[in-house]
Image (tube, rainbow, N blue to C red; front, side, top):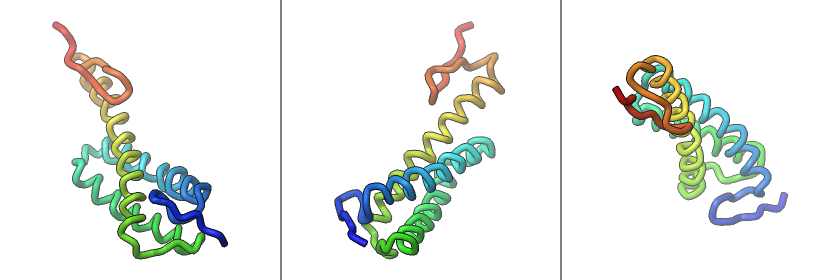
Length: 118
């Protein structure tokens, strides 16, 4: 299998998008939603994303002949999953704050909320 090594992915672009962005990214988004619903801290979500990035590296290694223990590509996967996971958490938290505390907060875009004017 021919690899298209680049600064951001070591496997082909298709494999990177399929595994890291679509599959692991979906898991990261759902983990972020679960963290928001459980009122977990960002540090706890970070811990889950570290584990998910390790699993993502294993999938690249097992299915697409990627390198298992490489800090550079692990960090790339982690950054992508952190962004997706924190977006899922923030989106869900904004919905929570405006639904549960609608008498205090109003929605301010998809990821934010603001205090209501009295």
